[in-house]
Length: 182
Image (cartoon, rainbow, N blue to C red):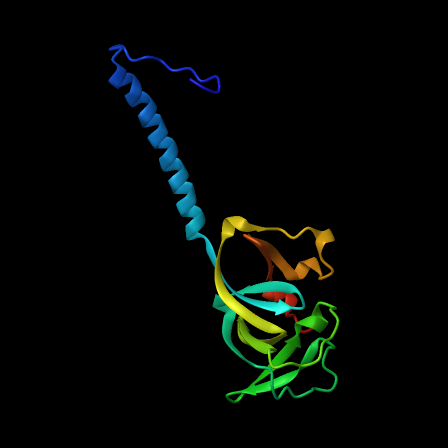
């Protein structure tokens, strides 16, 4: 009897009846833990992760249409400063948002690692220019927390949360807010 708990002994006083009480209680606790773990595991976020500088970001894979090399971006005069230009993807003109510019990060030289992640937001398709694409991962929703506003220079409205995985943090973007073209 621990933690100040009291137990009522069964009227038989038999050891097996007494032990059965504890085993039943332990089994109920284990079942409750298993149900909670199952619920957390069922709530997995499937993310495509990518790099911007030293930080790792993620977007839900359900929004991602495809990932292509960052070539042949056509500059559009008068476009917002964070719009790098447009690309022709199988006959469709798609605007490309430079996430470094959008998040007010320092510019870098173009590299072979840069990719355009084409995402679908409702009826619109938009490309996101990123430094490199990392991988597709599954993140339990239970490990995602809100980003402390003091922790980033990126407008926190762009961020949906931060996934904590072993030795890394993944900043999860809210695509609707971070890709608005105005």
